[in-house]
Amino acid sequence: MTTGNTITQSEKLFERSQKFIPGGVNSPVRAFKQVGGTPLFINRAEGAYLFDEDGNKYIDYINSWGPMILGHAHPKVVEAVQRQVKNSLSYGAPTKLELMMAELIVNMVPNIDMVRMVNSGTEACMSAVRLARGYTGKSKIIKFEGHYHGHADLFLKKAGSGMATFNIKVESGITTGTSNDTLIAQYNNIDSVQKIIDEHSEDLAAIILEPVAGNMGCVPPQPGFLQALRALCDKYKMLLIFDEVMTGFRLAKGGAQELLNIKADIVTFGKVIGGGMPVGSFAGSYDIMKNISPLGNVYQAGTLSGNPLAMAAGFTMLSELNEHPENYSELKIKTEKIEKGISAALNKNSIKHTINRVGSMISVHFGEHKITDFTSSAASEIEQFKKFFHHMLSNGIYLPPSAFETWFVSTSIGDEEINKMIDVAGSF
Image 1 (cartoon, rainbow, N blue to C red):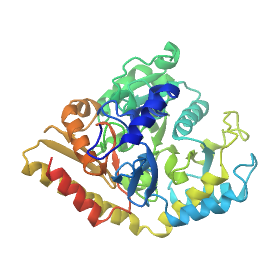
Image 2: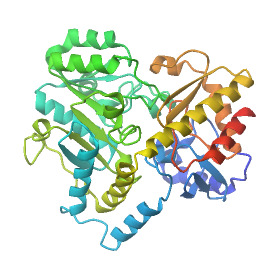
Image 3: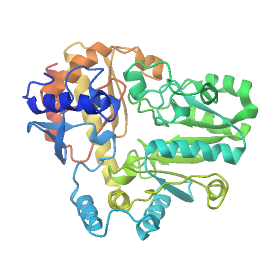
Image 4: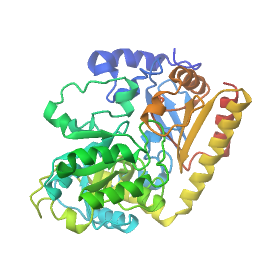
């Protein structure tokens, strides 16, 4: 049994699911394979809380893997979706909502002129690389070990997140040619990037990365690292692509570009811009984006792109964030309190650990070494994390079921929830 609560329904549902869904889940990390036990089947969520099929209540620090910045079932977002449902679910034609959404994103995010809507973060990143290749006329890309940009073929080489959780080292189903076009550098190690450039400078179209890594735990960029990447891209005529599926609109209104004062050439967004609906987008300057069809020859399409339900939910949530920037300072204060409280609790019990945090993204790593890249993240004490995860879960705290995933804080999490989390950590 996974928790101290009764989870009979989750156990029964998981047993049934394994007969009809591979591994019983529709995204691998949900399976609890790294931490062990039975995944919880969630019935509903509201504010800071999840409720499973047995009626158990959990404070949620996953928040649908990031997008629930304002908490679950925010009244204005729910109302916007309900209003749109009455007008139909999809048209396959342009809508005013798409235009409003694009205008809002361009207004909020620095350094972009145009946005193309897609249906997931994976699709956004895949399309961004295709655009970079079309724009530069070059084929190879640099990505970083432990950075996850979705499950497209070109991104699964040395990916973090679920690949790391399940210790998958061979990218089965991916052709050698595709794999050879993706070159791997070490995050926060500019020398590793320069070495690749020295060998392949004529063939490199782009560097893609999470500006704040979130798929090997939360790992911030070291001072000067992003600036050095920007300089290299300018020097060797490559495009710098920021995967802001996690960081976009969460760390600041303008995402990591604003927070870290660094300009990317193309930026990708994911579920955050849909308020949790399946959605994504990629954006850039007019000079770059004009190469996307129907303006240019780089083809990208999607029947449900700009889906009105996703646009209604996303526009409402982003408008709230745009009109109330104090949410970001509030989130930062809350997450700092969590960091300090958990650290003090673990120190009191002589448990070695490191906590990484940027804004409202945070992760706890067990061990005493700093976490600056995938190698150091993978060297943390995974068995200790498993015990910590189940201790927290059995006491009503829902964390990502992997040592390689970031936790996300929402504005719905208040002092009561924070204090409970700290108290539970103190009894570990």
